[in-house]
Length: 360
Ligand code: ADP
Ligand code: GN1
Ligand code: MG
Image 1 (cartoon, rainbow, N blue to C red):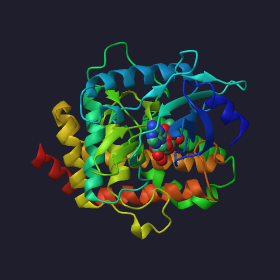
Image 2 (cartoon, rainbow, N blue to C red):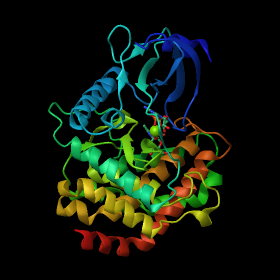
Image 3 (cartoon, protein in one colour):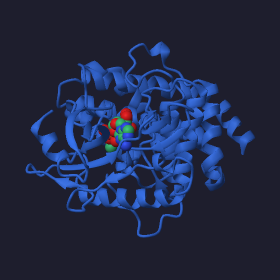
Image 4 (cartoon, rainbow, N blue to C red):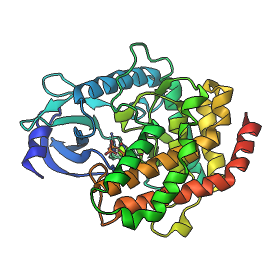
């Protein structure tokens, strides 16, 4: 337990003595800790996070978004069974603020731990795909009437695929880490996909409040029932397209392989998982969608998988400055997995579209 974590934990309105704090979860962005507090023999676990301010340049505005969104969601689930566990709950700092700024000017926040539920780094069953789809769909649906003003863009152009592509082109030209040679095949594949990068943006789809990071490990599934209980990781909740969310669900909830799987023969879009995911998503958010959105559901899976793939490739070429990495070549492995999945989705896109039509 480092001094920094202990000091930060003490700033939040939590009763009891801090017993321990340890790194937690497998997110690629923030520093997440599970802190255990004890009072009179009763233990309480808390999620403590140091916000990545290299990536999120304005943490107070980001926290303003999260306060507004969690307040809105809390009002929606009030009175539902188990409502406490259905929304992320911020624990305020002792001065009443939603965050704490430490001596190094780093920003911290604390959430109630959602107990008896967990996240999965890779989908394991059709039931999980359905539940993830339903939970993220419900999330969009509950935020459809979030009162004005517009949320802050915590990362501008987060899903602007053509701009992501342009950044990749610059990274290839710069070859800052001298790695372009090792990624020749991936670079060639990426460059061939350029025409698809603009398709969603040119389709005239409506702006909505979206999550923008709907990978399966950002939804907690109930241990006892498997139900999609609570959507977490709200840093990128901001104006976006419904299909950014659906696309990232396809990326992580239809192929049971890990995001960094090296054995690409294991990486494939499995149709029964897609069927379950789509069913879950439409059961909650279907009523929101326009005809154009429905027609592009499968395409969004291919596009967003490609987009995340080029982000991993860009980071590999730049020398791993964005995503946390845990081994040599990690971002290149992740890129390869995404591109294998893009190919697999492309092969099944016709069938995926026909399914959406029958459910439409
Ligand atoms: P990152 O932005 O780095 O992905 P997350 O907010 O997703 O960070 O948190 C990382 C992991 O911590 C999650 O995948 C989840 O397993 C766990 N986690 C986060 N918040 C909670 C919570 N309130 N209750 C239980 N687990 C949580
Ligand atoms: C990051 O924060 P985390 O680990 O849930 C990233 C997403 C990527 C994802 C790939 C703010 O998500 O955009 O899709 O990694 N988040 C940010 O696993 O860049
Ligand atoms: Mg996360």
